[in-house]
Image 1 (cartoon, rainbow, N blue to C red):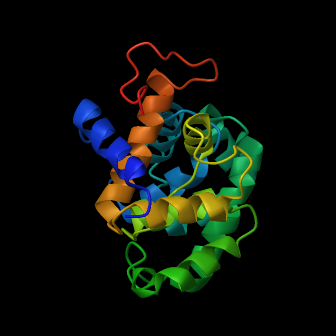
Image 2 (cartoon, rainbow, N blue to C red):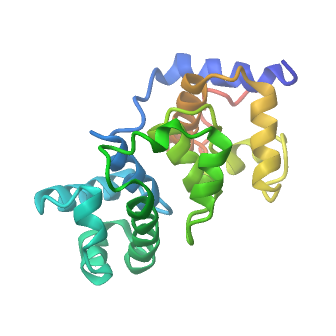
Length: 214
């Protein structure tokens, strides 16, 4: 292990918080939708939007892709930036429909190699690395480490890298520091979010932080 401290922090957070049971979602498609909606918002807001879609019986690829973008925006309003997210989600829905509309829950998409799948997702306008990797990790169960703003905030404060270090370099840092296991990547990302909400806020609350001494 090239950076044992990173793995020790994971084990400490897991011991302190326990499993986080991420990512909530009844289907692979629901998780894909949630990954787009969760950009720059709290998960509780995504849950409200998902409930709106379910209440209208719209949470399927064939139904959602036919929904006007303006209507979609209204239904996902709780997530904030809803006009932008509606367009990004629509772009992804069109891509999925054009390539995978004849199957249940993106089964053949799941057969693609990880790098090909990542490249395809990144080719969709509005889908960036964090969203693509969240889809890979949580919807397709691939061992891909997700880097978000919380990851940057916590580990730059621990002097592991600069906050503005490129996404790919931070991702490589974690991949080289951890066993390549989907379960660990999944839990670590969820635990980082939990720590950021409890302690490593914009104004940090270091009192009783489980990794303060790390």
